[in-house]
Length: 246
Image (cartoon, rainbow, N blue to C red; front, side, top):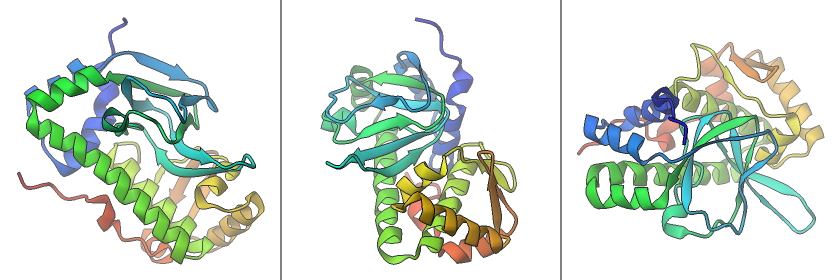
């Protein structure tokens, strides 16, 4: 197996450092637990509903989407994952995948065999809590998506998601002062918001006219962050951006 560049894990460690501090031993334990590096073309499933994977998957380059389908073939995106995110850490205890994860862009991922994750849980209690925290954060983000879909207008939902992705990209070291990569198509964006592509386009045009941001060629540029936060009723509390107390 080819050696994985340790720098590939920088977005992951950057995200973790926002909330907790790892010792050198714990840092090395993560590197030692890594299995193989894999690449996926855009549109290819990384994990498929019904799978029983023997590993969990960390995104190190690109963007992925968690999604489910209904009988008529319609697809609902239920989560977006960027470099630094585990897409299916919960498959370690749950085993059976009840949804799929697809590559939005060409992606590089690193697999973590469940046997190695078991070793971490048995030997590194603090690191185990950190990994547990990551699954809890997935749940917190999912709950917030439910709230925005149920209670916010389409314009507010869109603004909120732009805000969320900006903050998460900053945590992973993938954003600069006012811009970040957001390489979805409008159809994929609509699948995340639960909107038709026509409704998505009209909502985006209204948001652009506020002057708060621009989204072009896969990059979002924010011109007025306070205005965008207000438009999306965005409160980052659910992202838990404070250091944990041990």
